Image (cartoon, rainbow, N blue to C red; front, side, top):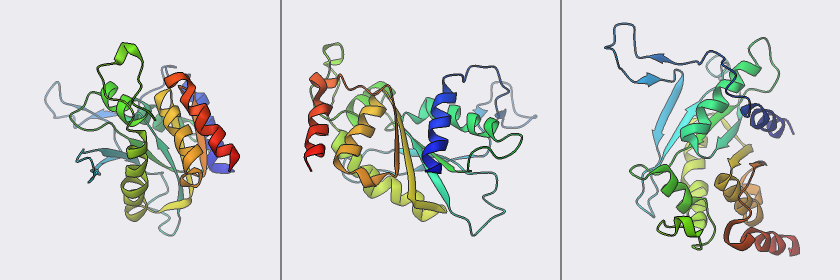
Length: 222
């Protein structure tokens, strides 16, 4: 399964992301004023709101180098949670891996961002967890919106990507870490065909007295 293989390579390589390689980013232009925003070139940001919750989410998109030159080609899509930090790391690693020739198949990278206006911690606690029973050290935050966010992905985010870009719907891979891995496990145990492959890095299976293991048991029985 090539798409899953590339996701595994990238997740493993991300542990070494601080190796000091040159970042593929630049300021807006040489003539820009000092202090201009740092821009990750070759990327796109699209608003994909959730009509049910009214929250505004964005998806970050990085297209493969061959995308324009091969207009009849469809690509696997790698979706990554916690896009604010994970998207630029995985994008740069993918470019470095193929720098001297193809090592992994090219793919479309999609970062799933936090809700606009929310702090990242609050957004992920709400959207990536399966029950409202969060840990005591974050008791003031809202938890348990994982099912609603899963519905948003299925009905809004994934269709948006596949309608706008030449994405292969049979080759979707989801990468999630920590709470993002918990969300991935929830999807795996309730709607496994939503993604073709899952890479769950250090998933928070401890959450709510290992609630996810009960979901796994229910899945196994069917």
